[in-house]
Length: 116
Image 1 (cartoon, helix red, strand yellow):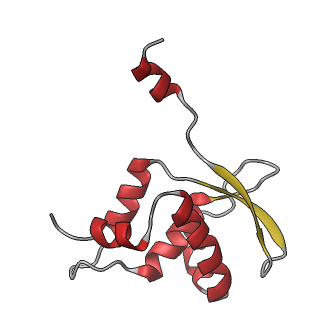
Image 2 (image 1 turned 30 degrees about the horizontal axis):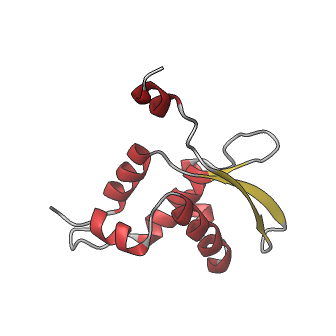
């Protein structure tokens, strides 16, 4: 198998069990693909080059939080408004873990939202 094929066949989606004390549950947080991350950041980019965090955080939760038992996604896009009503601490906690796992540091988010 060629190096290219080995890389493309590699299961490089990270998975981490995360205890969310505010929710009293453990969830599986998964990394996003590069394409999914780019599309999400483009969707959340504001005209001034900043990022719409009101939109980004719920989108991150929807995209990265899975049921560790079933492997199914926990939330859908229909849940984004309801997620905005959850505690800021719990959403921040899970969103930060998702961003860390998906290579979305604050600097990366700022750079992705700017026009090149």
